[in-house]
Amino acid sequence: RINSDGKPAKFQPPPKPVIIDKQKQREQRRFLSPEFIPPRGRTDPLKFYIERKDMIQRRKVFNIPEFYVGHILAVTTADPYASNKANRFVGICIQRGGKGLGATFVLRNVIEDQGVEICYELYNPRIQAIEVLKLEKRLDDNLMYLRDALPEYSTFDVNMKPVSRLDHEEIPINKLQVRMKPKPWSKRWERPKYNIKGIKFELPEKKMKEAQKWSQPWLEFDMLREYDTSKIEEKIWKEVTEELKK
Amino acid sequence: MMPIWTKSGKKHAVTLLKVQDCHVLRYISKEESGGKTSKLLVGGKNASPFYKSESAMEIFKEAGVPRKQKVTTFNVTDDAIIKPGTPLYAAHFRPGQFVDVTAKTIGKGFQGVMKRWGFKGQPASHGQTKTHRRPGAISTNKAAKVYRGKKMPGKMGNIYRTSFGLKVWRINTKHDIIYVNGSVPGHTNCLVKVKDSKLPTYKDCNKNPPFPTFFADGDEKLPEDLYDEEIFQFTDPSVTYA
Image (tube, rainbow over all chains, first blue to last red; front, side):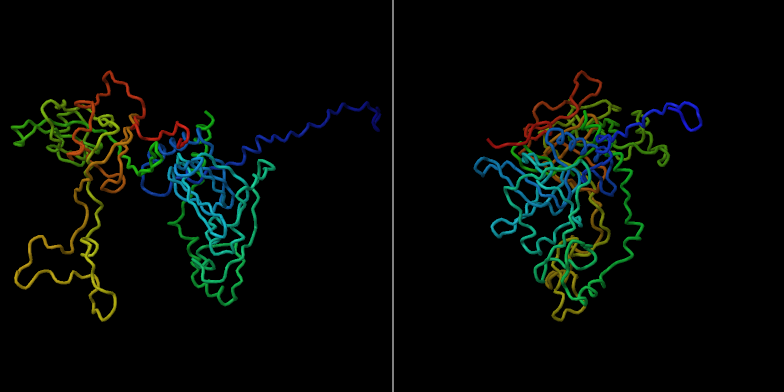
């Protein structure tokens, strides 16, 4: 070939292929279970280190999957009084509490028109298996308001098949606005201290305005309440992943 | 405090106690102390030597040991005497043993009679004038005096108290930590005295304890963690009921 200049065309190498390394993308998303983060206090960090060693040891033997509040889980526990000696419960995770070895999560389901909530300990040796049936995050960290919502929002099929995961990225957030039973509720969920975004409040405007009287707008600027966990999380995440790979 | 699970699936709460730089300071013979048994002075956590007088530092200089924050006495039989200057480790205790733990309780300051002694107080309404948390009557008419030791408001807490008969579940030899059943008096990171239990039910519980104590430079090489027989160790698979 000859260019318009009259000189022979310089050899242009083909453009470099863009390799999307899916493994790297997977690693970029870091998840550290919230019970690893030590609470604020005057306890010796050695105590948390030793507790973490025990927790990692348990995780090596028994797989605790990554899950958030709003996921639907099935937990099988060993029960001496049940036939088959095992007990399977399916439910939506409403809250995750506790730190260290005493970390717990509460599963809620409605079985035969009766709401049932069971609080399981993550590191209890009686738990045989934890399966994540459906992955979805909700708008709130704490779904205790499902107790005052219509029962259809808490019913889940006991024999539900696990929904297959599409990619190893981005857990979908379900922006469902839940409808509530008529008042009175167990807690006044419309008040700003609970900061709930997942309820469709059908209360009159006057009640909503009155609830804002209990708002404390200075709380987010309170410096004594600040607890920045980013650096601690990084350190602990590195430690935990290194130990789990061994 | 931490949870601990047994092989049958039961959960118990456990307090972690760290043995931090403990050394034997002095041996006091029976005649010198005037008691029934000879005594051993033991010192705890290391502290700065600059805040005490020279006379107080003499004990530590004799033993060749940095200044300790707390010094306690243990009554010892003659065959259990240890040379001053030997370090004491957590491996002195073994899992399955029973132990008494003494410490100063959390200080609550000057407290009223309801919190300090558990009095019921008076009703909140129905005509009570300025009397809701007061002790009420302090003596009878016939006595014509107030008895010594009458429960009244005063400084509460910051006194030595003991929890008896606590089981030792686990010992970590690397970090010198003793896992003791239940709760222990005192705030977090306070200094605590751990003794073999004096309760008659646990008199014969110690089978082959390290006597007189566990020596680190001896022949025994202990594993990093010593567990009681009933504890569920996290290296095992999950508990099942057959």
